[in-house]
Image (cartoon, rainbow, N blue to C red; front, top):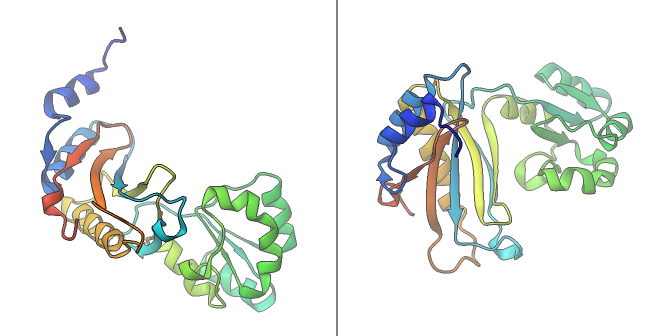
Amino acid sequence: MATLTKRAKAANEVVDREKLYGIDEAIKIIKDLASKSKFDETVDIAINLGVDPRHADQMVRGVISLPAGTGKDSRVAVFAKDAKADEAKEAGADVVGAEDLMETMQGGDLNFDRVIATPDMMGVVGRLGKVLGPKGLMPNPKLGTVTPNVAQAVKDAKGGQIEYRVEKAGIIHNGIGKASFKEADLRQNFDALMSAVVKAKPTGAKGKYVKKVGLSSTMGPGLKIDLSEIEGA
């Protein structure tokens, strides 16, 4: 049997894995446990939904700007040419290109959190469907990542905007900030994301929509959240 680390033992003494925690209580415990880490851990949320994303009318996906930001510097790639390329660079895009960027991504360089494109570049970007699609990086006008206003899209992506998307198992995974954030800021981000997900309930969802919600840090245990504290759940 594997020997538990000191941190794991401490977590087991504090966390009841069967208990339903209040949101504020869970955030405090997660911050306290993560404070013993050697790096600034991400606080993650897992939202288990009563949907089957294989059906188009049960897909849950959108973008939201977290009020307190993400605590990380998102890497943004932009497909644009000429003046629009210059705008993207000035706005802080990490990489800007056209056919050359497409070839780079085809070669396996996908170290990006967001890919943005001007409408005229979708002919090029479309050839990356099998590469970007599985990563959830394919530009989409509904998500604001296919737009002529690339400068604003880059600023949004850099300023705390995240994309949420339900996975095959019906779960949404996202970071809502860093363990070093104030408790109030993590709560604000939690509420903002949960509100967006609840409002995005698809027409095809039947029965219980929000089934489970869990919070954890990068290296810490998961805490189950009391759904009675989540409006609309």
